[in-house]
Length: 235
Ligand SMILES: Cc1cc2nc3c(=O)[nH]c(=O)nc-3n(C[C@H](O)[C@H](O)[C@H](O)COP(=O)(O)OP(=O)(O)OC[C@H]3O[C@@H](n4cnc5c(N)ncnc54)[C@H](O)[C@@H]3O)c2cc1C
Image 1 (cartoon, rainbow, N blue to C red):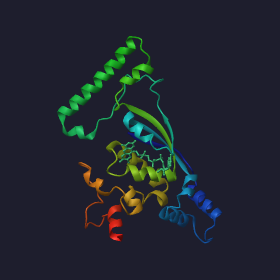
Image 2: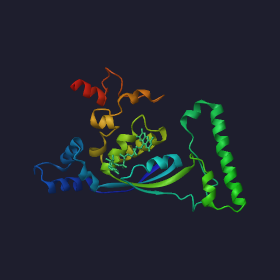
Image 3: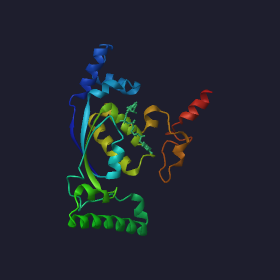
Image 4: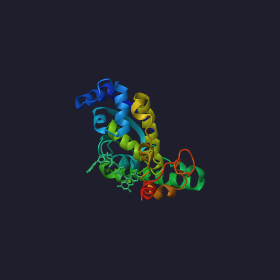
């Protein structure tokens, strides 16, 4: 998986701060202080004024489907109708690395689909029809644009241990890019539990097999309470 930042709003901190000034805030506040206040207090509509465009390559068709669920974004995906896909690369789930037999079966199944895709070409069948033979693991390319508010929402959902491993890898890579560009906005951003200091996942965060949430260990410094716990404490 490769992520390249194609474009982003330059001078974004100034733009966000100036948008806040239109609304009316104390005149002595510096740009960065304003933006910090916006992020901390979730006055997020002003974050919509800045956006980021990423070139995302080498992700699976399965992941591209999940990505499309983020509606407050602009999406452009490589066409399987107009592109010949016979020599596709594909995603190998990390879990298979621990099981040689499973890995072999996985690869055999993919190669069988590839052979069928190519065979139907020689029978004169169009790409439009043959694409239904492409495995969900097939790599695709993607251009994705999100504004900063939507990006925080995306990271909150997809940095969570409950997101799929491939999606988490994408989220981590995007996060490291944007945290470098605008640390004042993104450095402190994590999963929703980190962002809100309370985890909305409640007990399901205990049921993620093999993927341990670093915030669920009671008594540890990193512990983040669940929403249920906070409610019960109040009651
Ligand atoms: C761990 C995990 C498991 C998931 N499992 C499934 C699953 O099994 N099946 C499945 O279909 N999806 C699943 N999803 C996807 C999830 O339901 C969301 O569709 C996806 O995460 C996009 O989130 P979003 O709606 O907040 O983002 P966006 O679509 O970008 O929306 C951003 C925000 O805008 C607002 N908004 C957007 N559209 C509307 C609207 N029409 N009406 C009102 N407010 C709106 C909401 O506040 C929303 O949070 C899963 C996600 C995660 C993280």
